[in-house]
Length: 518
Image (cartoon, rainbow, N blue to C red):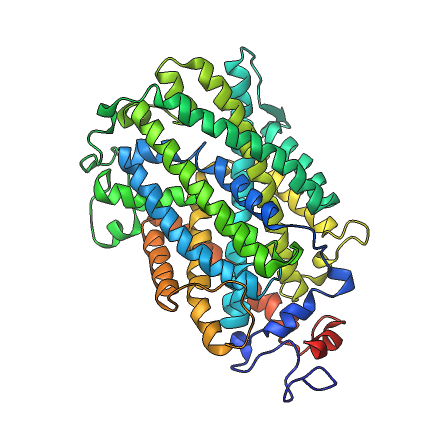
């Protein structure tokens, strides 16, 4: 490294290799960027905090809203297998995240990792996907929170309307309220937010254990038969756009259940595991990230998988999947109500409310950290990545993101776009999985706090498995996803390509000096 911050004549923000859209940001430049005093986050999180974040975002989205729906509409009791498939695929991908996060503990998650290995355009696309994932997930969960707030009050005997009419438009006030509360907490400080989140998470896990124990008293073995319901034609009027892409391309008639139903269910319930890639975005705010990030992510995944499988066994054993399919919005509460245990339904509704509260907080945190990283690199306006000198958080970015999420959740039917979250997550998992062997080959000298075993075999298997799950999402989801990607590519060439610090051969003001130390 020379005195002017270049290595063999290269700017500090670049790495050897192609230029243009394939230019890469070196690992040293990424590590140096965290010391920009105007764009610096406070390291305050531990392995325990990260595990809690993972459990917080996962236990709620999957257990309380997705599992019963997948059983009713896709896989029947076979949704248990769907969860196992999804957890195995997630586990493989999360090991890849753990290796990267322990090697490159910088905000941005898959975006940052792709920038170091596959080039700027790929990094931009995956960052754009992550924005889609976390923005929509935040809005969807906020919307669900409003619905469950009304349900909880209803089960307690109170009628609480969750919408008001403003200028002739129906506005959901509850999602906007909860988004505002967590926007304020996250803007003030990540450490404070995680402490509040820990309380919600402990309550949520306690209620989940209660569901498992109470539910087993109502389980009937005949509800698990047939474990894999025979495939049957989809409801009249279902178009090819609403069946898995694989079935559409192979010319299959739209159907539900059977083996394809289990695979479609796995693609759907993968929504339950999106939290673990969000946890990786906090690596820059973690103490001793080389050790804490792998322990936190993998420990949280093990606990969550055990809870998912046990709860799914209970809910499918309590009532027949055919009964769940007759409900407009099947959930765990539905299962208890159907067996006459309304008292349990009340407790679960409160648990759902608590659960979704912590889910929302972690997703909102992840969204701003991805945008923060892309802004710091110049791919989005640099002003968005400035942090508050007092709180050491991207204060105004957090406020702006909260406003956007609140408007989407309060004014739109965002829940109709739920599968868009899955495809955004899976696309990130694919690239991170394939990037592990690429960085191993390019930079074997880097210190890695965690290494994926049997590389490159396991990372490649992980990437291919994620692609398979993507192909089992509906054709309509793919059409919407491609439209989102097209919009992102336009933005990249109109703005990001010309403003990229790496492309301009520059970096943040303090990076030259820090790169010398690296």
